Length: 284
Image (cartoon, rainbow, N blue to C red; front, side, top):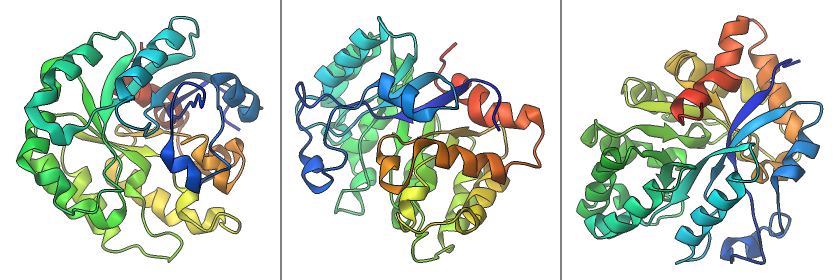
């Protein structure tokens, strides 16, 4: 049992009255309001002390409104410590005024542009995308990478070309767990971990397995490989809630990680479930 308050670095909050989420048409279980209070209730008996909101792919052009909504919530709810906002990085240097606007919101720590649903495999290597990414250090913003495992090669090239940018790899790059695939994901993860400007979220893993029948033993090789590759100083816990509800209760993923790290030291566990998230997103 994790007996200290947890920092969740990957939480999605939704307000269907304020925002449109076209993707929710294909995921009706998720297409409703989800609040920080819901998370607190569903996480019991665990205590979520603080969280990082991650953009929820609102319909364009509502992404700035979404970030400002999170800012307003954070001023009333001390659990909301950070925000990873959306920016359409493919617009290149032209979006710098919007990047500057986001950077002035106290809660914003980084940005994300979903890559997983981009049909062009070269999306992240286009000149405009790279130009926008390279602007992030100027505004003290990191970039969250959300991809499927087959997109890792070009993403590795993106990270190599932007050594001054701080990257956060979401959902361990969504490996093919349901199909039992380890390679080339495992080799690509080792290569990603060799790049010093990347940290990795242990998040979104159960949803890459069969939602109704996954087992902790099935997930264990993927967890072990990420920990072995990145080490306990460069990994952090993410609940990927409420997407995780598709594959089980909120405590299920916590219990899997608790079990998988049973042989680790108390210090290592605090790094995973708390300290590294605070450091990566500058929450303290």
